[in-house]
Image 1: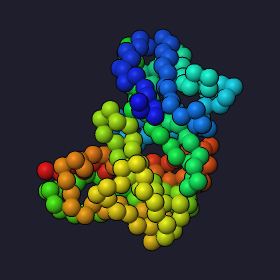
Image 2: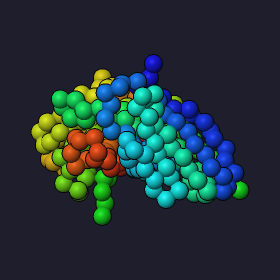
Image 3: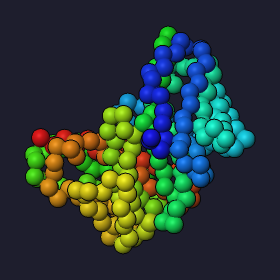
Length: 112
Length: 114
């Protein structure tokens, strides 16, 4: 089983609609969680951290479910510019520092 | 404000050739990382460095070597390139190893081994 798993998609989303997708992680000791965004042939960029109580950043809402070991990302009022691959990142603190494990990404395509 | 800069951006090698990828950051970050990204695999950590003069192996270190002679630079070397090393390579840096510190990525190097 992969340490961090994501549905690769693509999720085809009409402009203005809401889309949500999850990411599951296998290590219950994981401590920090992030969503990164990666545009085609570009570098990953931090979208938002995921806090235990859930958090919003504009149209984006991230949630963490420790009991079921998954995090989620919801995008409201989707824009064409939201088309990208969303990478789930899980951090585990080890003796040499935190170990970040990346999921394979979920591709989102927003269409007019 | 350059951030993390990778050179070269593209390279084609023949099997058995060697080359070095350069990563430079101007944010005074202690921690630097080299990843490779392959379709459907996510980013996998090759090697990382927690400070000048210190390096450590990541998840997939075989076939690669690294050096961190200066704090701002992290070099990734391929001693004898193999087709399996065809990939997109990303360098990243972070202020600290703490889980709540994001990593800043370079633009990537697209490497093809024939």
